[in-house]
Length: 147
Image 1: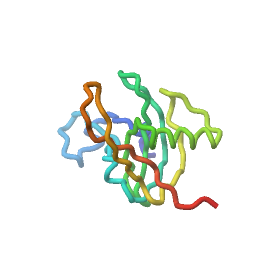
Image 2: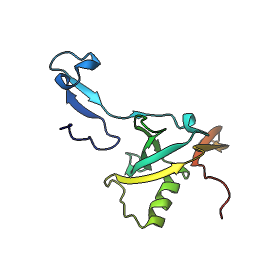
Image 3: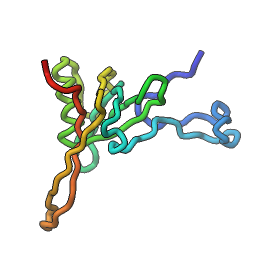
Image 4: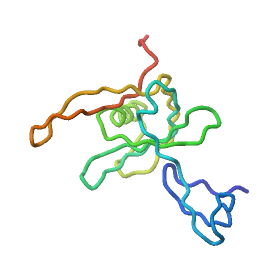
């Protein structure tokens, strides 16, 4: 019987005796979990969203943790987004599907395919001191025209 699956997107600790193929010393704990991916690597590349949850950080910013796979048999990966892009699109998707979720709540299993991956919007913003800097917002890209 396989070991129980860890909660999505979380780093878990397992014992080295179960993972000695990783080269861990006998009796050492080993970090295990999904690798976070840079959103820029998903621009124009299709992927499947398999889970999402929303959390709030210490600065009171709500962000989405997203579990994805990039093809059949691929290892799960994760990304985080706190923008009006991916985070808000996923929140709207869940609301439209009638799925209940809470900030700080459990993972929600989904099967949402992004056929064209992400797109990025680049723009200039000004910080509190008035200095200009570049910013990016990533969006899930749709298949195309609505019918």
